[in-house]
Every structure is written in C-alpha cells, then in structure tokens.
Image (cartoon, rainbow, N blue to C red; front, side, top):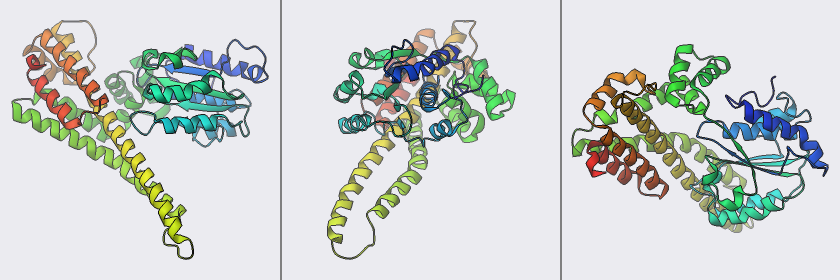
Length: 394
C-alpha cells in the first residue's frame, strides 16, 4: 500500500493508527462521535525516528480528499510546505517565545481555507516553556472547529503535564538498522555497503543516516569528532581540540545560515521600498529599522540553535564511541556502532576501566545539560575534553 505514510520507516503500528484517524476524520468534522480521531496529538520518539515525517503525513491525510493518497495536489502541497491549511512550525530559537505562541493561537482561530482541517504541526514541543505552554493551552483545550494540533517531542516527560494530558499520545520506536539501510537503498539508491554503514553509524536516526550516506563532508566531520578521544594527550591538546570543534561547528552554522539570512534581509528591505524617494519616506525608513532589528534578533536566535544542535550531534557521536568502548571492556555481545574503528576502540578500552568509561559518558551528558542552560559552548567543551582526558576530574 503506497500512500503518505509509506516514508515512515519501521513504524507500521503508528502508520496504522494515523490511517484509522484519517479515515474517521470526516465523521469527526461533521460533529459525530469518533474513536480514532481527535483534535490534539502528541507524537514522541527518539531523534530520527520520524516524528515530523509522521506528523506531516497525518496532516496530508487530513487535507487530502482521498485520506492521504500521496499523489494529489493537496498531498504534494503539504510535502513541499505549500499548503495553505497546513502550518509546519519549527522554533527558530532555543525555546518558543510567548509572542510566537500567541501568534500561533491567533492563526489557529481562523477557519481552514480550502480543506476540512487547519493543521498545526509543532516541531520540538519540548521547547515550550511554562509561559508559552500556558499560552497554547487554551487553544488545545477548546480548539476552533476544524483545527488540529500535532505536537512532536522526544518523550512525554519532555512536555509539560498540562499540554500532554490534553493530547492523544502516539509513540514511535527507533527503526531497526536493517530497516534504515533498506530504506536508504530503495528510496535514495544508496550502495548497500554504504547504506549499512550509514544506518549503523546513525543508530536509527533516519535523517542522519541519509546525510552520512550521501554527503562526504558529513562523514568527514563525524570522523573528526570520533578522533578526539585518541588525541587527548595533555591540557593543551584538550583546550585546542575543544576550540577546533567549536570553531568548525560555528563555520558549519555560518554556511547554513548566511545564505538564508542574506535572502531574508534582501526580501525585507525590498518590501519596505529600499532606495525609494518621495513624501513619507522618512516614516517608512523608521518602520523598516524596527523590522530589520526584529529580523536580526530572530536570525541570531536561529543561528544559536543551529550551533547548539550541531554540538549536540557531536556529543551523540562521542557517546556512541564510549558505548562501544564499554561493550569491548565488558565483552558484551552487542554489535559495535563504530565497527570500522575497532583498533582505536580496543586501544582506548585497554587503557581504561569500565568505571572510567562511565564517568566519561556522564561528562558528555552533563555537557548536553550545560548547553541547554546556555553555557558558552567553548567553556562547556573545554571542560568536557579535560574530563574525557582525566575521568577522575568529572
């Protein structure tokens, strides 16, 4: 069966529930009792499990006259983020601001334009703080007829109780390595050997697996990160490696954000008639300054988020490295995530104890918390590299 849910890798149970809900949606829209469909959903699952894919597929199924065929104008519009009744919201900063959430609530009060439903897909619902969550709560409790909220988060514990208690929960699992490899081969035409490596290295993260399989620069950056544990010789090397990593991530963030920021600023200035002359131009210029400042603030928040997300990815790769070290130290039967680095892993395993490895993993997890608390990345990673060199300091 080919439809909008086909791209959900290893999530047959979730796809079945969402198909049932979409099939029941016309009945619910007519105000009749419906057991499968509801107006607020919370989709959880580990990073890369396909939360946003599932949410957008469900949105397409709700606005599609055929329940999510995947080929009609409505489904194609959702896939390309061009459907007027489906809003895909990704926070540009570390948290959803109250102003941003109020704007969402305001738009949710509007009736759908051409589809039966007005669907809001909120990525990273765990970034709703107490104030923004309370702002959203009323709309989720008493939504406008035809409005559907689909929130995505890593787990129910990451979402405030007031929000999660009013949503129907759908949990996704981490796809099996074989399922991810098969998807890379069949959908993206990746060589089977490369697909197997990427699926194993990504640990079930589908987006990460695709990047590793198709982008050589992503593979090189990952190799640079995984070399850190074997290059920590003294305090100087610890500080240098931390600085190099943060600088590389900042450069990567610039390559992502710079073109987008330039395009946004150019469009904004054009909208305010940059270079125009005549009566009233002084008022327009004053208004333009305020709009430019607001855009610059949003861009700074987005850049900080990109940097943090890239650093978090590096931490996840390092956790996988030390997980493999622990597997070797305990002679466990689990497969290695980084099997291609077995000689380096065996050397680190032989030079340390399981207790030291666990302390290193704790230091990595603590660094994630420091980044969430907005500690300066360079300071956080200098502390981390020192702790990785000497776990007793952790």
